[in-house]
Amino acid sequence: MIAFNVLTIKIDNSTMKFYLKSVLTLTTLFFISTSNADNSANSAWRKLALSNTVLLTLPHGKVVIELAPQFSPENVKQFSGLTKNGFYDSTKFYRVIDGFVAQAGPKDGSKKDKSVPLLAMESEWDADSKWTFTPVQQHDLFAQQTGFKDGFALAYQASKDKLAKAWLTHCPGTIAMARNNEADTASSHFYFVIGQAPRYLDRIMTIFGRVVYGMQHVQAIQRTEVVEGDDAVDHRDFTNIVSMQLMSDVVEAERIHIEVENTESTMFAERLIKRRARESDFFYKKPPPVLDVCQIPIRSRRVK
Amino acid sequence: MIAFNVLTIKIDNSTMKFYLKSVLTLTTLFFISTSNADNSANSAWRKLALSNTVLLTLPHGKVVIELAPQFSPENVKQFSGLTKNGFYDSTKFYRVIDGFVAQAGPKDGSKKDKSVPLLAMESEWDADSKWTFTPVQQHDLFAQQTGFKDGFALAYQASKDKLAKAWLTHCPGTIAMARNNEADTASSHFYFVIGQAPRYLDRIMTIFGRVVYGMQHVQAIQRTEVVEGDDAVDHRDFTNIVSMQLMSDVVEAERIHIEVENTESTMFAERLIKRRARESDFFYKKPPPVLDVCQIPIRSRRVK
Figure 1 (cartoon, rainbow over the protein chains, first blue to last red):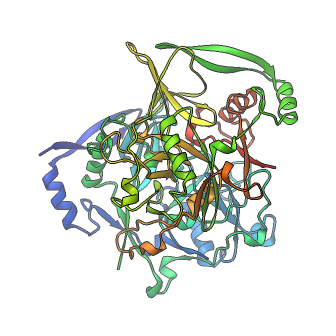
Figure 2 (figure 1 turned 180 degrees about the horizontal axis):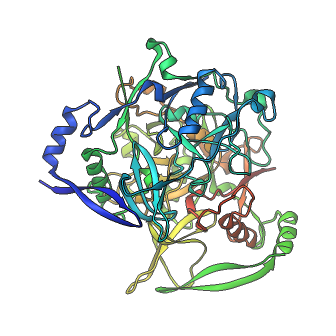
C-alpha cells in the first residue's frame, strides 16, 4: 500500500507554493478509476462537448480536435466560424515537413484567403494568484515549470516584478495558427505539429487546440517537402481536406464521441507519479525521475 | 560580417574543457558550404557506405537506415547478418503505438524467433579523454550535455570518481533493439521511435542506427493499438516488411545513395549557432537560446 500526495500548483504571484490537495492510497484510487465515467471533478475521464470538438475528415481517415477557447478565445471563435461555414472543405495541406508540421489553408493571396480578418496573438496569459494547473516538471529546457490543464500541455514562468506568464506548449498533435513574420497576422491557415516538440515556437504562435483522436491519420498526410535529389511532389497529390465540421453539426450516426483523461483528477496525478518513478521491472536501471510534458500521452477513448 | 567560434568538446576525464577549434567568418563558411561535396573532415556532407546502410522496403515506400557499428558493434553485426540472410523479409510490425514506437520481428516464441542468439547491451560507453563530439546543449532534462557524433544524437554525463559515460539518445527515427525485462535479452526484434523522444529509454536500450531517408513511410506504418472503444486492428492488416537488405546487396539500379550532413563540420557547428539564435524576423520575440538535440533535423540528400 503506497500513500502519496496529489499536488496542485496554486500560483501566488511570483512564488510557487505547493498545496497538499489530498492524500489517498492506491487502493482507493484503483477503486475510483474503475468505477467512474461521469464528468465530475474527481472523475478519471472528461467528456468533450460536441460544440467544442471538430471533425476533420481526410481522404484516409477521421481526426478529432478539441478546441481551447479557455486559452485562445478569439482564435477559436474565428476557426469555429470558418469551420461552420465549410471554409476549409477542399483546402489542402500545402506545407508538410516530416518531423515538423502539416500546414493547411486556402491559396495564399486568393480572394478566399484575403476574406478572413487578421487575428491578434493569444499565445500566453497572465497567471494570477487564482490560476491553477497540474504540475509536471520543474526546469525543463524552455520553462521554469511545465504542467497540464484541461488536457493541454502548458508552461509557466514567474517574474520578479510582473505577473507570472503561462502558455500552451507545442507538442505532437498541437494545432496552432500560422502567421506571417509580424505577430498579429494569423487568419485561417493552421498547422499540426507532427514531430518532436518545436518548443521554440511557444509564446509566439497561437495554439488553439489539439488532436484527441486519429493522430495516425495526421501523421499519414502527404509530405510536400522532399530531400534534395528526390522528385518534387506534384501539388495534385497534396492531401485534401474532405471536410472540417463542428462535431455538433455532424449527424448523430457519424459523430465521434470522445472522452479524454481528466488531467485535474487525482487519478491523473497518480499516473504522473508512477510514470516518473518507472517502477516496472523493465527498468533494470532507473532513468532520471523527470518527465517531458510532451512525452506524456493524454489518453482518449471513444464512447457512444 | 559575424565572427564566431566553432567549439568541439574534448573530454578530460571528469571535467569538460572547451577547445577553440577554429575561428571563421560567415563569408568563409558560405564559400565552403557551396563548394564541397566530398568526404573530407571539412566537408558539409558525408557519403554513407553502402555496406553500412540498410534498405527497408515497405508496401507503401522505401526507407534507408544508417547503422552505427562505431557505437553498437555486436548488435549491428547481428542485425546486419540477419538482414543479409533475409531474416526480416515478410515479418510484420506487430506493436505500433502512435506517438511512441513501431516494433517488428518474427512471431514471439517461434522457431525463427528462438534461432537467434541473445545480445549483450551496448547502450552506453566510457568516454575517455580522447573522445570528442559536437556539443549541442548543457543540462537538458536527461543529461549533463547533449551533442552529435557522426549524425547521431547523443548525451554525455561526467562522474566524480569514474570515467564519464556517453550514450546514443532516443529521438524520432532512432532504431533500437527490443528486449524482455532483463538487460541482455535482445535478439532480432527492433523498434523505430515514431513520436516525441522517449528519452527515459536512453542507456537501457541498445540504439544501433537511425532513419536517414523515408521517415514519412515509417510514420505511415499501420498502428496496431487503438483507443478504447474502437475496433481492434486485424493482424492481417499489420504492415509487412516486403524486404530488408544491406544496400550493398541491392542491384545498382535500385540502390538509394544517401549523403547526410557532416555533424563534425564547421558548417554544422555554424548552423547550430544560428538555430539557437533564431535571428529570422519571424521571431518577433526571441525564444530561449536552447536546443533540444532531438529537434535538430540532420539533413539528408540523395545522390547518384
